[in-house]
Image (cartoon, rainbow, N blue to C red; front, side):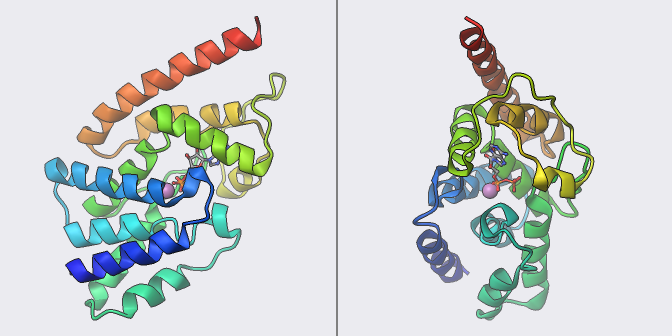
Length: 211
Ligand code: ADP
Ligand code: NI
């Protein structure tokens, strides 16, 4: 199992070597480490957690711009002699990780899924979350802020995917909502601190904007 995780790390590191800062190899590695930290108090199967953390963004719609039905992930894990049930569990976790809009629920069917979803979302919060949001927005040419544009809490994944707003809007559409959507108590505590830091940042941003 260790060997499979090691090979998967190398494959993902190569695949992500040219990505911009919001979805680069370091994001994957932080999510893997945070997921293992959460596992220490919350439990779960280490192999499933580590593999799905490593593979969770390989076919993300935001990066690939298409729905590939996890074909790459499936063929990668099926190339090892892993029991079918475990492969299915990994794919299920990956399918359940992603945020799909303020009004869209993203339930988790296993403790592994709860942990990887929490770890991914914690990396979208706090100082690193702020940096990632502006890296992502910058890569798409989004403005920092559009003061007159309304804030929309998207009720469907389709609308959320098509949205065209400023990066500061993204805080209201996603980042500030994450604290309430944590699955585990361990993550909820960390999310509280990261949330407060984002609020301080937004206050200061608006003060400077309106100076
Ligand atoms: P998820 O799968 O839940 O969307 P990811 O790990 O793929 O999570 O990464 C989402 C990251 O991309 C977050 O850090 C988030 O801030 C950033 N992001 C996504 N959409 C936007 C956007 N419209 N503006 C700014 N940042 C964004
Ligand atoms: Ni991610």
